[in-house]
Image 1 (cartoon, rainbow, N blue to C red):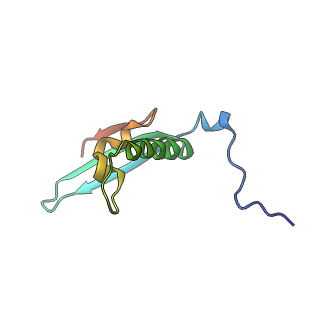
Image 2 (cartoon, rainbow, N blue to C red):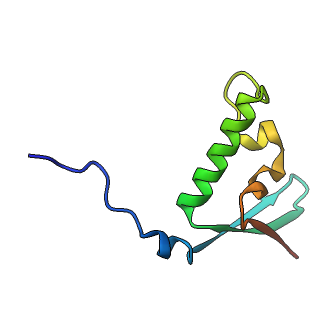
Length: 92
């Protein structure tokens, strides 16, 4: 008996039309708050493009030893490198 470990993914045509919006809010110790929306393509494409970008940077020697997030190593704007990604800063 063969059991597929993963469910069937969405068709490429469908993925091309899917968008995601991530909303983030941060507040400092003085109570000042900032809020932004990150608009991305589907999660599969966004994850793959981001991972391939990190791999390319690591192969060029652009990395830090130890656990680090991509933003810690490549800056807060790293997330904007993927095709179709943009950020909208909201007035709080």
